[in-house]
Length: 79
Image (spheres, rainbow, N blue to C red):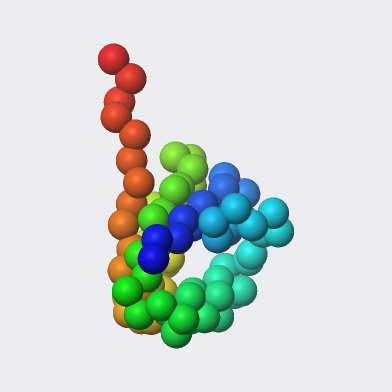
């Protein structure tokens, strides 16, 4: 199953269409829950372009730790 993880410019984390943001500290247990419910889960990362790369690396490291597949969604550059 595919989930989306949106990271806002204010470093709020949203899973799918959740209206309530998660903090980074709340993200690990939520991802762990997703992984335990669905071993084949894929998280599609949708990241605000203004956040620091290190913030993205932290999320990817968390995914690696939990053995959750993560992919980064990108947009084609405007012509």
